[in-house]
Structures are given as structure tokens and as C-alpha cells.
Length: 372
Image 1 (tube, helix red, strand yellow):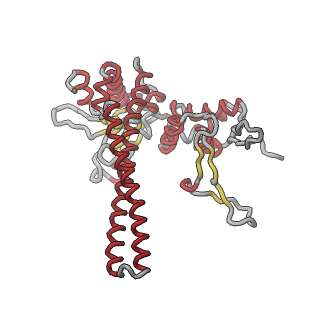
Image 2 (cartoon, helix red, strand yellow):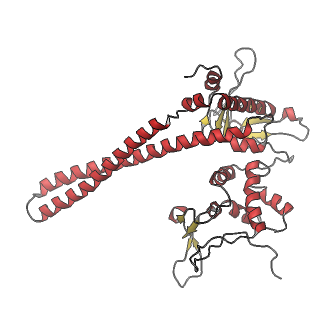
Image 3 (cartoon, helix red, strand yellow):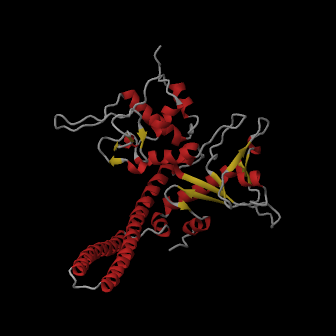
């Protein structure tokens, strides 16, 4: 008897026989599924382990968990064509071997994207954080996101079938597994964590809404004219370094020919070649550094714009939901509680997607107009 499991909606690229361009051929229900699965993951309805159950429950395709996981990880749905994912040892072998990702050949934007790049990238991040249900079946939207500020490890979500919502809490996994001597106990109640994160997100949203230009400056964004000047200067340095590397190649070839022809002694050739090689190594390091700086500067400006656009979707945020949390926040870091003043105080740092940690003091200064 044949299997009733249908294959996943993997893209099939067809060649261009008629001069009108090849592309993907997908059925309407397949496109719907490809959107539903990542959307549900980012929205917090499911995680990397439970997503197959959601799909199987709502859709009659009877896909396995491995099939759903494969869907979530396919870059083709971003509009790219990917070649050389697999290979065979020889033409005699029927066994398919898988290439490492760095050996893939990716052709970007070859067809219409089904999933935008930001959603796809966010899904990959969320897939790394396994958020399995507890024995009671309870889950919490902060599971996999909240971490210890000291050791950086995840905080365990602790609950019980007899617990009220106010009793659910998080504790540092390191202190639980290795003892308090390794890392002090970081304990925070789930409701307190939610209130603190919601309060900080509202403050961030208010700063962006009311002081957008000051926010841009505070985050290190430069005026467009200044950014263009800096980037142009770095690109000029980049071009000069590339030209010098080419010139050194020519010089090295020339002294090699002179050495072979007897015009240059072996000792002199060795000294010059060592100098040229050292200069080339330094130039290559400079090239890499300049490329990184240029990419970071371009990406920083884009990230600030993207973050502001993201914040503007939640100007009237009244309630923290998994969808908002997964869209806005990458991690929450919980510090040890401070009881030195006779009452419990606890600092939490929120690392936002695209922006990183935004200190409360900086946001308060923005609200009070104290930041230039």
C-alpha cells in the first residue's frame, strides 16, 4: 500500500524555453502553507517542536515534522535559486551526499519571493531556541528568550499544575545544574517579567514616536550627507588598497624575472619579496577591515530605519503578545535581585531585534529632552 503523505511544496524551477523567464510553479494551497508556517512561528502560536502538530491539525496534508522543518529552512522561498546542495561520489554511485552550506551556489532574486527575508531570518533565529512544553502542558512566551545576565545561559520556566499565574517563574539554568557557586540564583516571576518588558517597550515606542530624530542620533545614526562622506572616504581607501595589491603583484613578478635573469641577487630578491609579502598581508587585513566597517555602517543605517518602521506598527501597544514579543525582542537578560535597600529591585535588559540593548536611562533622557 502506498504512503498517503504528500510531499512538501518544494519549489520547482523550470528553464526558459520561450524567452519569457523560468520560475516557480506552486499551487495556491502550497503558497498558503508556506506563509502559514513561518507566520505562526513568528507570531508565537507554535515553536520549532510543535509546529507540525498545528499544521497537521488545520490542514489535510499529513506532513511529518521533518517535512515542516525542511519548509522552514528552505532559502528558495525568499526568491532565490540554490544549486549544488547535493553531489554524488561518482557517476556509478546512487548515494546522494549533502554539501556544506558554504559550498552552495545561491542566485538571489530569481523569482518572486513567498516569504520576505526578515521573516525568514527571524524564523531561523527562533528555530534555534527550542521551547518545549512543560509536563503540565503550560508554555510561556518568554521561554527561550529570557537569559541570565551573568552567565548568559537560558532561564528555565518553572510551573506546576497547582500554581496560579502569579507563581510561575524563571530561574537560571546554570545555578540549577551547577550550583550557586558557579552562578548566583537569578529568579524572576513571569508576571513581573512581562510587566517590566511591556513597560520598557512602551517607553521605547514613546521615544521613537515623539523624538524620532533624537532617537536616531542617540543610536549613532548620522545625517545622510555625513554618512555618504564617510562611506565615500572608506571606499576610496578600499580602491587604493586594491590598486596597491595589484601593483605589488606586478612588482613581485618583475623582481622574480630579474632574479631568474641574474639582474637581482638571491639575497636582494628575498629581502624585497619579504617586504612585498608583508605589505600585501597588511593591505589584505585593511581590505577586510574596511569592508566590514562599510557593511556595518550601511547596515546600521538600514537597521535604524527598519527598527523605527517596526516600532510604528505598535504605537498603541496595550498588551504584550507572543507575536509582538517575537517580532521586537531577541533576548531579555535578567540580573540578580538587589535587596540592599530593604526591598527587592531587579534590573532587566532588553535586546531588541536590529538595535540591541536600549538602556532605560538613555530612553528617559530622550523623553526628558536631555539628549542632544
